[in-house]
Image (tube, rainbow over all chains, first blue to last red; front, side, top):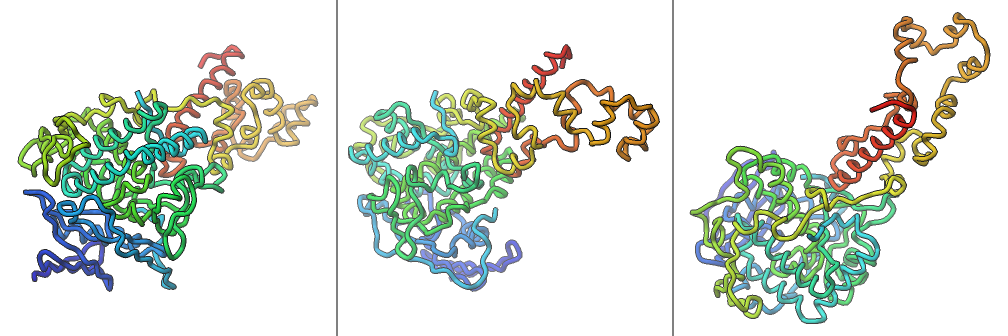
Length: 115
Length: 403
């Protein structure tokens, strides 16, 4: 496993690459990521929680910093899975698990805040 | 030429037509193929340069499928960087029962309202009076004339997906929720705006790379699934005959038969002055002088002298009906006029007819900057400015003054 630490927007980000899986840590928040080879010559880091893929794990990690307030917004519903199913099961709409993030008492940045 | 406009400009009839035709396409069995197609393009149309052209072709084909059922329908776009409320700020124009339905139910995320309530969709239980934002990031990308910088908009676009959450928040199934098309119509509009903004600059490239990128991502590469390749999987029946659709074929949105209300003049709405008054956003209404809020254009001309008179300080009004000596008039002038010399007073008195009606400091700021970041208003504001200018010229012309 390789680990990269860097500062972005005043926040320390840790990106752990344990190919083909990985973890991005922003503060106390951990994001599970995975590496996909959907097509020859094109590989992407993706995360079930995010709607963003990048060839660079670092870029995906920055996305978590930029929009972390959305990922943890109260009442958020996540329908996970499917980033690498395109080669195997492209006809079903997986609904294995639905996660709802409940409102926390801790203050959060408003959802309307621009990035 | 189809006009893709901000969803806030849709009439109730247009909202109904749009949701009806989507439901019809789904009932006909033509909707799910688009979901599968998007799933197959997770690597091909995402995370790389072809994100913009791939989705341009993709939403264009979806729009044509809708138009095959109802030719009057065009995709609207959702500008998620701004609030999408009615002028009174009391009602969402997107999350409503006659359009996209509401947020998901708290806890389950089930969508139970609106025209797609029976689809089994899920969304986050967001506040309908808020919005994703991300305007700052998008503006920074738009300002660069480098495509590699511009295409970083894929990141805030993803945030909009995440904000809605549920199905549209998962890239592998996102188009199941029709909000997907509104998000991507906006993405496409941004590309059109960006090209329109920078195309006159020396060395500008509307798309990169020209070569050397992954297959399907170079300017003249053909793109899956329309090219008929079986990677990542076969496409039939979506493309019966392979077509060579390349990013190079998709750089000019107008050549594809689309226009946007923030880019193309013919797509901008023609608004009557009266409608404009009704459609003014609340903050603009509040800033207008009372006279402008209440006046009809026709009345403006007739009532101008009287209004002018009524705006004068009481003392001066009375002075007008009396034969005051010059010294007495000066005593009654406001302090700032008293302090000005005769020359300044004369200049004020000789301002052309119509000008003093609204003192400069009271005139509403009709520039876009006055409204903050709300690009959706820009067409209205431009139309308002033009209309006010025309009215002013009419009034001045009627009194023998050229503009």
